[in-house]
Amino acid sequence: MTGYGKPLPMTDERNRPFWEGARRGELCLQRCVGCHAFRLPASRYCPGCGGDGGEWARVTGRGTLESFCLFHKAYFPGFEGEVPYNVAVVRLAEGARLFTNIVGVPNDRLRIGMPVEACFDPVTPEVTLVKFKPAGDR
Ligand code: ZN
Image (cartoon, rainbow, N blue to C red):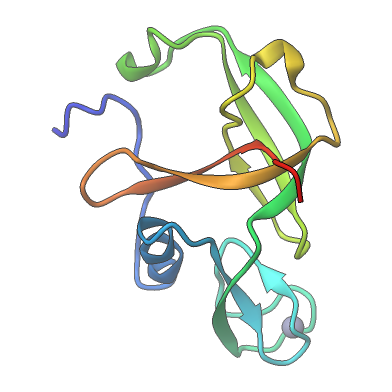
């Protein structure tokens, strides 16, 4: 046990570059070598063109809050002091979407469509989570 008290992501060979990037403070996504679409989660085949080539690239980390909900119940001990907490869907500027948490803003200030940018939360020595905060001046 790590003492973290919350579930940790499943990491494997396919998604390892994503998690290695997060530890460096970089958001990295798999990109199709055929149609250049970014995809997340990483997969063998591109859902857009069916091609099986993929490369990894660092992306901007900028996106918009597409949806969110608030959890009022702690399903894991590590969340007991944090309810209600948000779980959000962010659509990245590059088109891919991911589930995450929005930090640095009260839940009652969350707005669909608000610009956000990635930030990095090292929760264990091995795992750094990608979260998002309101985007600063550009
Ligand atoms: Zn493709």
